Amino acid sequence: MKQVLKYREIEGKSTGFWILLGGLGALIALALGAVLYMEHEGHYVTGMTNQIVWGMPHVFAIFLIVTASGILNPASIGTVFGKTLYKPLGRLSALLAISMLVGGLMILVLDLGHPDRLIIAMTYYNFKSIFAWNIILYNGFLAVVAIYIWLMMERKMNKYYPAAGFIAFIWRLILTTGTGSIFGFLVARQAYDAALLAPMFVIMSFAYGLAVFILVLMAAYAWTKRPLGDAVLFRLKNLLGVFIASVLYFVAVYHLTNLYAAENNGVEHFILMDGGIYTKLFWIVQILIGSLLPLAMVYHPTIGKSRPAIATAAALVIIGGFAQLYVLLIGGQAYPLEMFPGYEVTSSFFDGQVSSYSPSIWEITLGVGGIATALLMVTIAVRVLKFLPVTLEDAVVDPHAAKTD
Image (tube, rainbow, N blue to C red; front, side, top):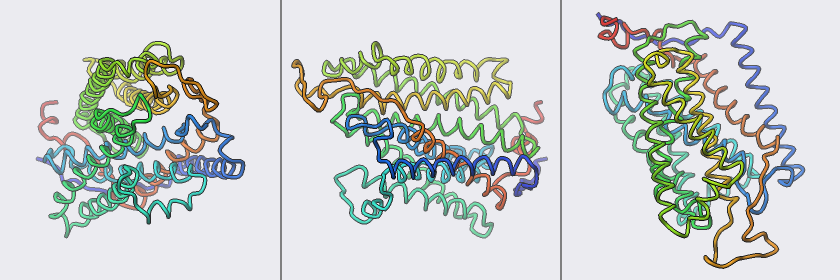
C-alpha cells in the first residue's frame, strides 16, 4: 500500500545548519566587498580587457542561469509528463530554479560597474537586441515559477498547477534558447555565430541542472537524516547519463560543423589543437573529466549504484560545465575575428592577435558569491516552508520498486 506523501520544514536547530548559514553569508559578504573594490578601482583590476569583455563573472552567471532552466526538469517531468516518481521533487526543483536564476542575475547586475544602469535596461527596450528579450524572459521565468510553486503548495489551488507547470516548461525552453542565442546571433566572434548554440544550451541546461539537483537533494536528505530511496536516486542518475551523452553529441556536431566551414578552421584549430589553456580545458576537463568519466561512472553496474560515486559524477559534470562555458565564452573572445579572410590584419587595437586573460580573485569571489546567494535562498526557504518531503523512501515514491527489492 502506498504511503501518503507529507512535506515538512527542516528543523534548522543543529550546529551544522548555523555553520552552513554563516559560511554562505560570509561568502556573500566577500563577494559584495569584491564588488565595491572593483567599482571603486575600476574594471582594470579584473582580468577583463577591451578584447575579453566577458570574464569569469559571466562564466559563473551563465552557468547559474542555464542551470536554473535545467534544474526545473524534475518538476516538469512530474507535472507535464505525469511521471509520479518525480512529483515529490517538484517543489524543491522549482525553488532551486528561482534561486539559481537570482544568483546568476545578481552576478550580472553587480558586474555592470553601475548597477543602477539596470533601470535603463529595464525601462528602455531595444527589441532588435537579444539582451532586451532576455530581460523579459528572466523576469517572466521568476514570476511563472513562483506562481507554479504557490499552486503546488496551496491545496485549494492544486488543480491549476499542471497548467502552470506546462507554461513554466515552455517558458524555460524559450529562456535557455534566448541565452544560447546571445552567442548564436553574435557574428563578431568566430567561435559564436552558430544557430546550433541555442539547442546546445538547452541540453547543457538539462545536464548542469540535474547534476546540481542531485547534489542538493543528497545533501539535504543526508544532513536532515531523512530517508532517500534508491528508486529516485538511481532514476535521476540514469537520466543524468542520458543528458551527458546528449551534450557530447551536440559538442561533436558543433565542432564538426565548424570544421566543415573553411572560415572557421582557424578558431577550431585554436580550440582543439594549439589554444593552450583553452585546449587543455576542452579535452582534459570538459570532455575527459566532465563528460566521459561521469558517463562511465553512472552506467557502471557496480560503481553506478554507489551513492558517493553518484555524487562524484554529478560534481564532475558541474566542473566540466564550468570548463565548457569558459572555453566557449572566453576562448571564443580570445581568438581574433577574421575580418578579411586570407589577409593578415594588424592595428594598435590588437586586431589579428590572440588575446590573453587571467581571472582575478575579485571576479572569482563575485562568482562564488552568486552561488552562495542561490544556496542561501534554498537553505532559508526549506527552513521556513514545506519544500521537502518527509521521506523519499521507495515505499512512498515507487511501491513497485520497493516490492521488487
